Image 1 (cartoon, rainbow, N blue to C red):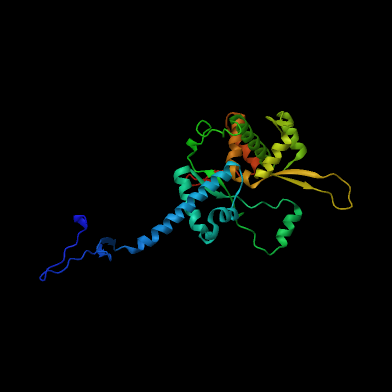
Image 2 (image 1 turned 120 degrees about the vertical axis):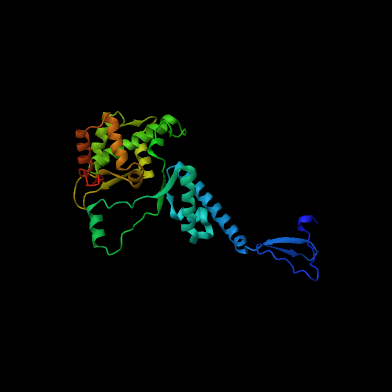
Length: 295
């Protein structure tokens, strides 16, 4: 037995020494083991380690979903990550958020609930006594890096399928979402096609048909295509309008639309800012007594 772990018996006139922080116990075979007085930490460490592993699993799941622009749904997290630990959702989610912010520079942000678009949907919502949903239960990853680190020179488009294809797709859906937002959040299909024709993008976007690109945008939540059919017994054609989807609102947002317009016009001036705010329905800002901007 090593000297540091050998035990000496006290003599008749000596009291045994006790260490409040460390005790020595003998096993049945005469060997000795050191035991710490903090027994609670031993029972907590395995739980903490298990939570950390689940949080890392959630981070990997979120990254894989975001790579394909698939909404990260609460049900999917419980099924693919938590398993029988579904009640620990809030705890694991908070740990994953901490890892995402400190290591990846991102965070999970909940998508807004899809807005009621048709007059019939709005009337039904007003008549219903059911409380509206406060959250959609679906999330996307967004950057929390300072604006100085979000430039294209630092954050380049994905290399899959190619950098050019990804950059073109990003620019295309940003443009379409901006056009819808600038047209009071509703854009008719003929008007959208007119815009795309002027840009020579009404038939193809890079090597993909424009129709397929718009369907991909709709599937990923950037836009919503709404078809209004004439009432039963009435003649007429279907009316198609395009609206902003939940991902478009969260990923691009008003700041993205305003930045896009300023980039197109090359410079910002008072006249441009006034027209931009008017088109987006933003009230003119004013400075309060403390110098803060109020919308």
